[in-house]
Length: 114
Ligand SMILES: [Zn+2]
Image (cartoon, rainbow, N blue to C red):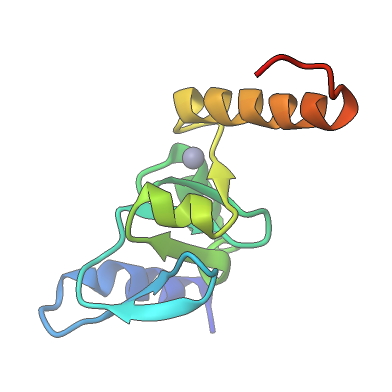
């Protein structure tokens, strides 16, 4: 399949009878009647906005489409083990990063209050 065919599939999202393949909280794909609100990059487990400039650039190169997944909402993406994209969700990414650091500290220092 060429990159162009992949893009055309992406762009066919407006047809009324279409079902959308979304990724569930268990990381498994399922069919949904409504499109996802967030996109994801499967190999690196990153989720971000559908119009993420970084994702669109990869899509344009044709390397991204087959690794692209979609989520109904942010909760699902997080449950599936994805982390926020640093480029299009910098605020979310910052919070996630802080959480990661905290988890690391809790592992190393059991004296930590809270
Ligand atoms: Zn992004």
